[in-house]
Length: 212
Ligand code: HEC
Image (tube, rainbow, N blue to C red; front, side, top):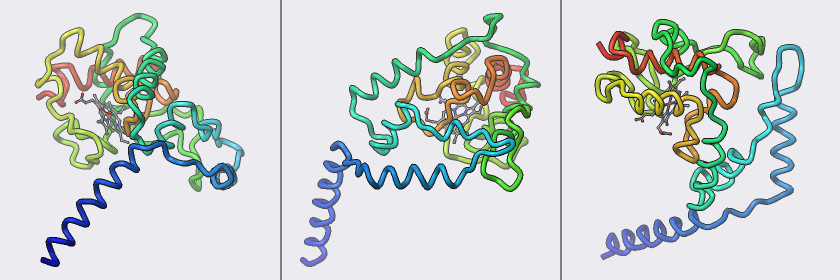
């Protein structure tokens, strides 16, 4: 009997929390100002420190405020706004060189701030994709925050639609999933359109080790 009651209570609590999560979170302006101040002070500007990106844009602010669970209308507005940011390479080719893409997929440094030796903002940048996704089956060190991408092109083919989707997803993940955990690598200027086309080829091309 007691166990039943406890379970029931747990179910009610869960349901109630569900309602709270969906409601508009209350923002304590004073607390927010304090947190913003601490963040700015923790990453001082200085040589090689590009801290301009600490400032949240409208999309990031909304996702953080709603803990990634934005109301439907807001999600639609985010998708529309983020889609508009997507740029293609000057030559219009969304499939580049998979060998270069292999390098940029795995390059996990550049653009770090606040570390002991921050990276030169002008240093060649990679996408650090293995932090969240598998790809080349020979690479055993990868994170699992994102879905595994080994065999990506083998599974989906290399149609124009797949190439376009893959390129644009990498350019701005939040044009497809309002509060994606995946960084907006093109939009944030971490990867150039050309590098994104190279990484697209690494994922899609039948020649790439991803699809062997
Ligand atoms: C911080 C983790 C993270 C990083 C870094 C990251 N991603 Fe993702 N990615 C995700 C998550 C989570 C998803 C699934 C949710 C979504 O679609 O937004 C995803 C989804 C994707 C998808 C869509 C997969 C599908 O089934 O349609 C592709 C393609 C992709 N990522 C490629 C990349 C590439 C290429 C890079 C590096 C340039 C990269 N990601 C970097 C987290 C990450």
